[in-house]
Image (tube, rainbow, N blue to C red; front, side):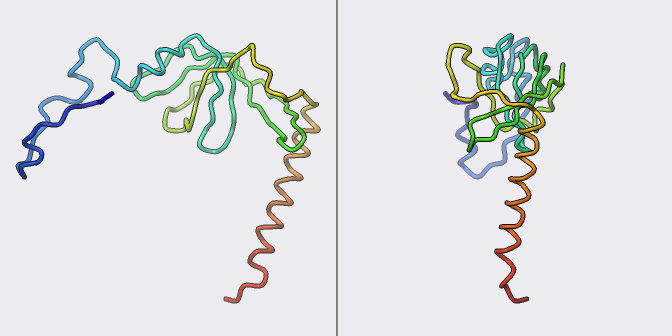
Length: 146
């Protein structure tokens, strides 16, 4: 589906001025891209942020900038090697749209193969994995000459 139309004069080498902002062409309606968000209001979502955090919560509303108001949010920490996770309850959050990398509906009927583990255990394992990843990264440059 096309999000916009292009006037033939765009290809003729003439400058074309936009008379109205894109959103004003549809008074009282959401921008085209927002339909996906609108379909997910009042649904449980998994939201992955730019910094890698994984949040799960109920989308309540959003605005024209794709800022999301999400309730009953938990930050999910997963140890993939062991197929375990732990959640940290965060409550209600307003998530800035530019920080959202990916989101999708959580299917409550689907088993994901993960089992819940104590938070302290999962956080300790994450820290251990990050430390070992950091050492591996340093070893890559240990033999490099300046």
